[in-house]
Image (cartoon, rainbow, N blue to C red):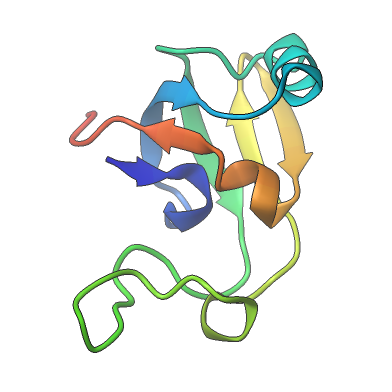
Length: 96
């Protein structure tokens, strides 16, 4: 599994789960981020799942992967999320 913030531009994925407190969960689910929803990464700055550190893990801090918002397409809508918010959304592997 990987998180939404690590998807590459143009990549499609399916939401596995969302982690966070009740306020975050309520807000994010109201925007349509629910399990089994397909998303497409429209915009993100820097990094991606292909960039790894010396231990083979994805590089995650702001300088290595780029900061700022990500923009995704889901349920016929483009939605912008902060990078930390996107990091709380887990994606399923190998969705075509």
